[in-house]
Length: 138
Image (cartoon, rainbow, N blue to C red; front, top):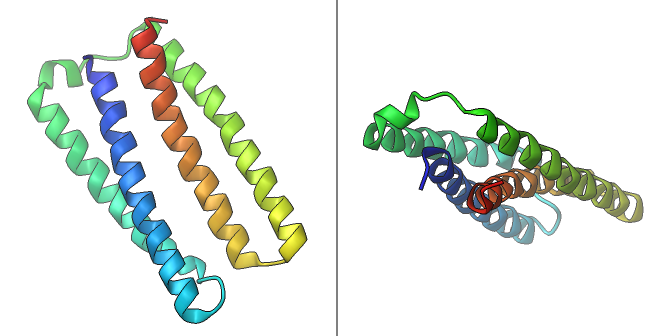
């Protein structure tokens, strides 16, 4: 397994774990308040993602320092470009659906959380596309 694939797996796991925790916090806070929770809850998500990704990348770099310092080759650059392009469609779909929800329900806090969820899902999709393209040998 290449360094880039290991990195994509680790980041997908970090993003998934942090976003599940964020979803749990938003649902619990919304239930307790009787309305959609404030967007300030996103601070917990950002802290978790930053800490988790730094720790994961440091552990990965220490375990294989030679691969960590190697720049992306032409194939890896194409994989990154394609996965970013495809994840953009995931983000756009989520944003449009979020706006549709806002038009129907006029809940600004929910709009924020839905767009944040779209960002998270698109980032996880980008890592999944990278893994798929790396394994497919492009």
